[in-house]
Image 1 (cartoon, rainbow, N blue to C red):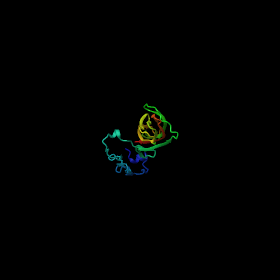
Image 2 (cartoon, rainbow, N blue to C red):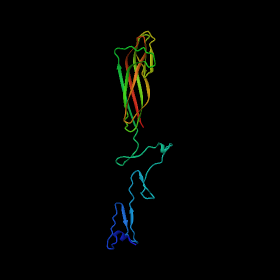
Image 3 (cartoon, helix red, strand yellow):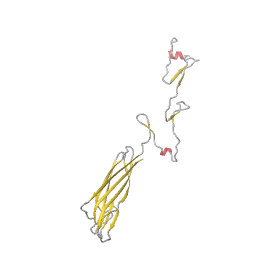
Image 4 (cartoon, helix red, strand yellow):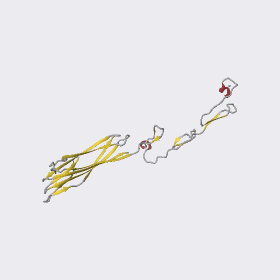
Length: 233
């Protein structure tokens, strides 16, 4: 039977066998029956996020905490990913943004309030705002709030109203015997949420209509605000 020396040196009995170990590895013994080679390795150094020594009894594992929430971990937990530098990364961070536009439009000619009496009035101006999703990864949900204010001039018996997106928001009438100038009330309307794809944009457009005009009622100013709250969660 060949011994360790013959295994190292082949069939020659006149050689010296040298065993070279790599970094972190040690080799003891001379390869004989009474002193066999013993190879051992220094356990790897672990940093934050890892535990264990790399042995069968103590394998390397990720150091994690217990799931503290009442919901199901498998269904609700986010992911952990490896980036191009080998660094562990979590899900994208939540993003919030806010944009607004405002217009204060004056009408020196004092146009007559349209006499339209149906549910959307006659459109006299249109306002719009482009909304961009700041997140390139996930869709955004947006809530849109509008504020409108119209100045009416109402002679005796004059009547006027305005509509936002075909919804009557305000109506007034002068029942006195003198002209009333710059009658106005600021109203607020919240529009249902919109969805914007990752990195995409939408343009929100809304019409202001007027109606119920009577008795020579006119308008001289339309002020609007469009405020948008953007959520990416």
